[in-house]
Picture 1 (cartoon, rainbow, N blue to C red):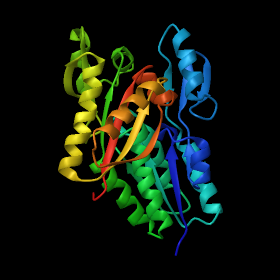
Picture 2 (cartoon, helix red, strand yellow; picture 1 turned 135 degrees about the vertical axis):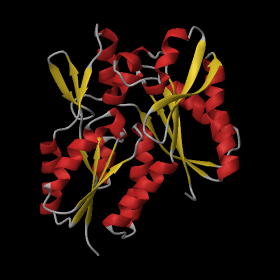
Picture 3 (tube, rainbow, N blue to C red; picture 1 turned 30 degrees about the vertical axis):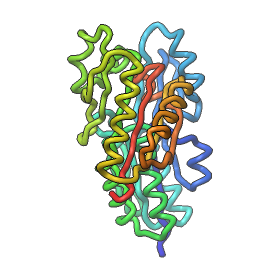
Picture 4 (cartoon, rainbow, N blue to C red; picture 1 turned 60 degrees about the vertical axis):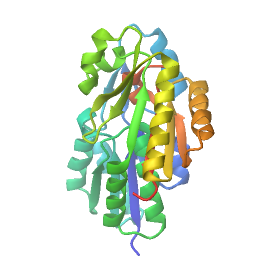
Length: 285
């Protein structure tokens, strides 16, 4: 059985400690506050980021890893005895990270299978966890990559934002752009579609109705698809995530909470503080 390495980027929002404990290599993106540069999750944790964001007059910038950063990661895994590598990343339409990984893969000393999940944050985490389980069960690199792609295709991601300003100013609003000028008291539920582009899913009035819309969507899909593997995410507002979690559990929906966590600095640059979301994957997918 060949040894297969797993590489991810920091926008999966799994902590460096968790990734290291599960033998997964993380290549971080960069966040820039003016001339100050920070490696996502490595030099800037989410709590520090949202504190800086609150006092920063403009919008931070983000930068994808260079091909050289991926080349270093791939070469290191090859030196550790990995005969193949599976590299799993955030949505290509939102970041050039997948391009850097692909360029580095072409020159890597061992075969690298690059996977564009067309997702972000805990939705990517769900795909990584599926890939990790396949790796630990002895699957080949090609099989692991197929597992990650299949998980990505079947994973849905819904989220709420306190404001669309960060998304619009950062140029990541996708098909939700038209909502920005006409929101008033409308609270949009957004979805990342199969192409990795953000689009409106549902418009409701007020936060309570918006959170309930997330719960209702989980309940409906659990009834339709069966047992769901679930991820929860928030930006600097754990109480909202705890509330969402309890509402889902109280609904009686057939779900298993697999991952939950804070949105990191890179995705937080565009989501802004207060974002809240749910992502899920049918167990039989």
